[in-house]
Length: 331
Image 1 (spheres, rainbow, N blue to C red):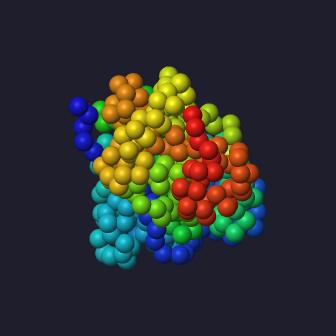
Image 2 (cartoon, helix red, strand yellow; image 1 turned 60 degrees about the vertical axis):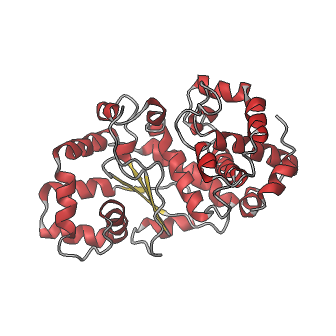
Image 3 (cartoon, rainbow, N blue to C red; image 1 turned 120 degrees about the horizontal axis):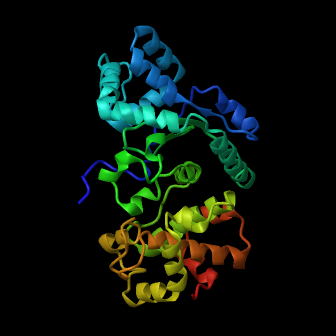
């Protein structure tokens, strides 16, 4: 049994509408190249030296990041509280977490490839969603907590959650199906997923499987369009065997959903099982997790191929039954 720690796959924190990063206005006028603000590096300098001057400097340079990380880790929004910086420094000074922090900074010393791929992804989004705001983008270290933090104009990845499946510290805490989503290749898709979810939050009935699979399928479809070089199995967090299982058992999976009356029955517990990363043993002993997202992706792909809808129209269409009907999905 793995140790039980606080593990959030994608945490979306919607806060106030402001951003202090100088690159925000540049990105809105031209997003040819996204520059990621290295809050992680600057905060580690504060943790190491902890001087009043550095506290003042980081408070001036990163007011929004301090607020979201304070809320995400300490549930403390008031960065002016006299204990705020003491709690921040003490938290990151814990020996194991401090070593994790150092390892993460070393692993992501160079992020040029991430910035290039993220630029391409946001270019797709801006082209297809002309009114979409492009956020200021950051990196942080959470201590194996939130993967992604999102504000109205801010987006940050916790790099310590993407150190690779072989990273020694992960072995005691995470299962193999979790580790596949904890590698550097997942960073750019997770950035885009978090931003899409913040721009187009789920408004359906989370107890109804149809609503959930269509919404998750939309997100997967758009990310794959934005990042076409990412293999579908990687985007799902599957290995090749698991992905082939889905392809070979697509008809069986859909028939099982229909026969068990899972598609429309408002059962929150049953619906949630289709989106767990744990293997879907309630379907088959060798079925991977997150089958709801996978089958939703297939439905949305068929819908887009048949209707030639724009992705912007897709995202504002919340008639999930209409999307299923027009997809004529029959695996």
